[in-house]
Length: 99
Ligand SMILES: [Zn+2]
Image 1 (spheres, helix red, strand yellow):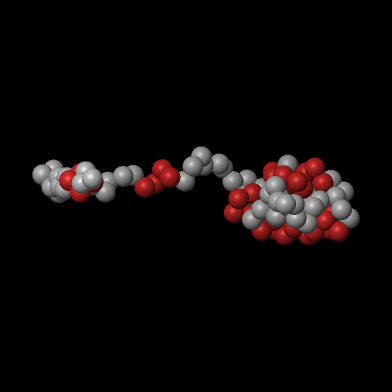
Image 2 (cartoon, rainbow, N blue to C red):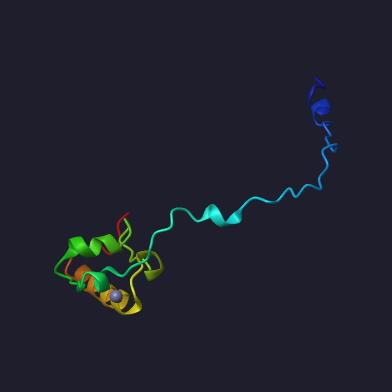
């Protein structure tokens, strides 16, 4: 019953630690980069609470509104969008929260 202790003694210090062990390109960790465009600007759309299918693309599965950081909307349209989403929620077009 004394197998375990010997396995721990495996010291390998022989590989010279000076060769820049942490050069691991950090930049490419962000995932696929999508070009951010405001769809409301480019396509001349207006956020509309009567069109929940369109609004649904700007909320999460749980019904939360996505931040402009993710949607790429400009501030002006993001603001209009959130207003419309909230309006749509009151009218039960969209969920407040889904489990
Ligand atoms: Zn816009």
